[in-house]
Image (cartoon, rainbow, N blue to C red; front, side, top):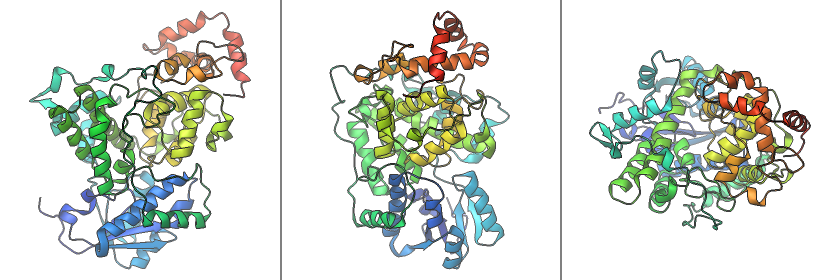
Length: 497
């Protein structure tokens, strides 16, 4: 494609736009501006390791681009642009707030033009056409269209294997008599002088952060991202699908790719990840169910969340259809895993504390499930996920939390609330055998807070659940519980989890 602009206007890249797709191709001739804005680091209470990753990514980008890039350190982005002294081009930013800011900068003459972002497979304008006047959204429809559009896992117009979705094959419980899956360790980058300087600088800033500092676990450069992708495809992808939804207390990464950080920093393009996974299947190095499950996460769910973030708009986070108004407890907000008794919840909180990361089932069916049952404010929960997770950029969490996890949008995104009792966690994890709580009990000192909390949730939301064909039966089951009043009283007074 011929360049749309051949002038010498520099290109300003935000800290989550640091890959070749952003500064290569038709923009390979441009000077690049990178900005470290101290005010942005102080604006929210971020995880310490998240701040490290972002600064490391920015500074490594400067090293990789050499003389082509200018890295300006300033209090604010506006200060940096004024210090830089020339108007700049930008790609579409990744949040509503950043988009409003860029519009303001354009009015001030500091930004000349806003370009479509190449960070995702599907352009925003194409999703708008797909969405049309839909009032209900179904990811499976979007995912199939994505497969057709990009010719991924297709035999002509039909899906490989004559099935679009192998989710039913990807729900195995963790293997018995094993503490880990026994896979080679995931890729971990080697820290360098850049990381040393970042750590010293963060120490000197005395920021209010959550979590603990620790070795950098995730790729922040295109080179590192390629290595992480290659290692995942070779060693972890073959078992990814089978245990995709399982949790093991002594195997935090299991067979997951750990690619969400480089993807969300822009240093790994989603289609590169999809292409590598499909090639592994075509070459006979990974089974179809595993490859399809991984591709569904990247080309389906991730793209879907990105586009719905923009489609639903900035007011989406104000949705609170279930009337959840409890503030996040201090142990949750401060990542105090030692204050938690339930093994599944303790491990999930500890994972966020120690790494700023946990996999999707811990997010949805442990942390999200607990928050849903206890009525935590969905807007506060969205903010917590966005700041406490190293991959939790502003666009990522609203639809995942408000829509999928907390059902706060009233069913616009998900067809039912994702609430479950301890039986699900017992089936899909190895936590319950060592837990002080019994997943089979809903009443008593050793009653599982998830099992009891489930019935408490059903009781408080019975009208909504009774109207939903997928959840009508649980209301009828609740009405047959002889000890329901005692369970409700117990949960109303519960202080420990």
